[in-house]
Length: 89
Image (cartoon, rainbow, N blue to C red; front, side, top):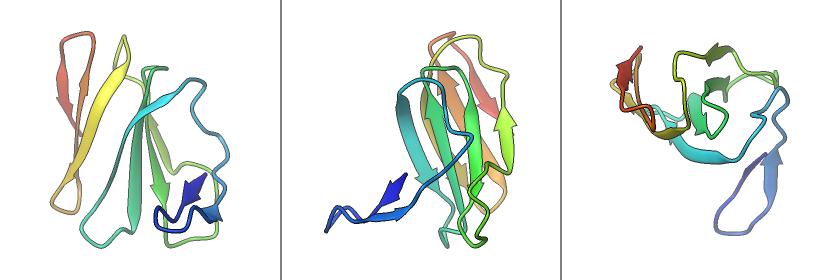
């Protein structure tokens, strides 16, 4: 789920979520896309502007836990994982 950090109020429940703990979350500059990385080795992308609660994309290249994600510019995602790789999408 996505929540307001100031109030703790749940803003949105996301479905098709990770199968393990989420390690990292990032948004693009206007918060229209949310990106999450997890112990399950996936990076998931969510459309914050639509009412769809399913991920718009799942990236499965990592062979171990994803430890960090950032969104650079509007369209580039960079992730790092325990398998020693830094990936750009």
